[in-house]
Length: 274
Image 1 (cartoon, rainbow, N blue to C red):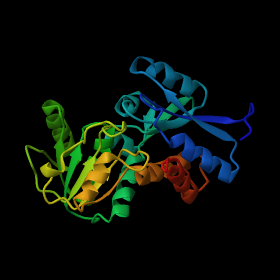
Image 2: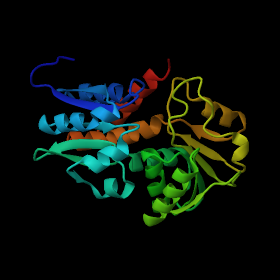
Image 3: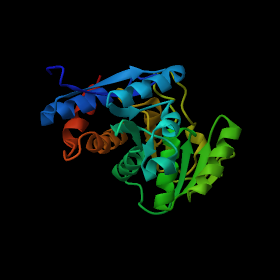
Image 4: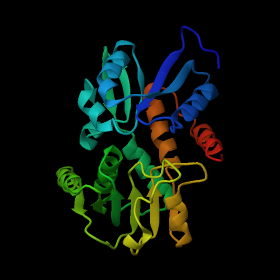
């Protein structure tokens, strides 16, 4: 890839961010389409976030947002799409008229990953572990698909606040107290990024579950995915969600260009075979 003074710069911002495969995926897409752009990962602390966003707006920047900044960026952009406002979290941004526009392609990504897993399009009983930006996208998806949703968090106050917020956007959300009978379990926490992490939730605490989606991705898949499969539960990690939300974001970055989804998926899968 030749980088010149004309090369467009895109970035994913987060903390941590070294694990992100967004650069691998988007750079492969740009090469495939002959687009003069390069995509980087920037580790940005909470204290530096406002300065980095101001720099992005001043330089016509675009990119993505990962943990833990999605909710803060949603509050900071000049303008936001309806879905971004509904989720209350921003994972995709670009510049228009000197200001940042925020969007959320996680909702599309979650829904597409659930389709890939064979989850019913309507109804069902879901559990989401976590209350951050990705969990918000899960709640919106549940509302749109008419699924009942339970939330589990290590912080009881955050779980109650999340459930109350979820009801305001039309989701049927309750706090999970103890074991709960569900069809689908979704991990929307960062637990699993490190190989020594504990499991986001014990399989014994989700009786009846038949399908599970871990929004974390890792080489050779996450420990939670392996533990679920050992129990005969159909499970997948977050790579398909990554690809689908990335393809939707690519269309925002480069209007008029169809994202090369197969190229993006192949790049992610190659990186995760390590």
